[in-house]
Image 1 (spheres, rainbow, N blue to C red):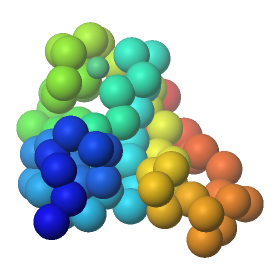
Image 2: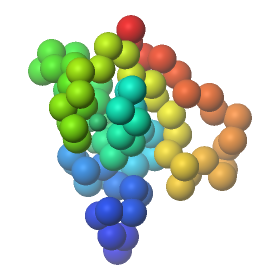
Image 3: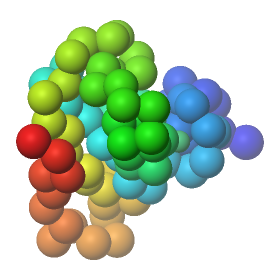
Image 4: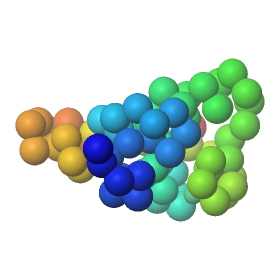
Length: 79
Ligand SMILES: [Zn+2]
Ligand SMILES: [Zn+2]
């Protein structure tokens, strides 16, 4: 069982953190699904960790999974 603070699981849904979404505050503790739900369903554009307003977020493969495919670049999902 992985520790909660090691960045391998989402801090919101506790699923394995394979894909993460982050903005200018660079918090990568939430998965892309949670961030997308937060932004599109709840209409909240703030970071779930520090509440910074994020005008855009990027989705990227979490570093603990990145070894399997280093060619995945971060993707802009909303601007
Ligand atoms: Zn999540
Ligand atoms: Zn943040």
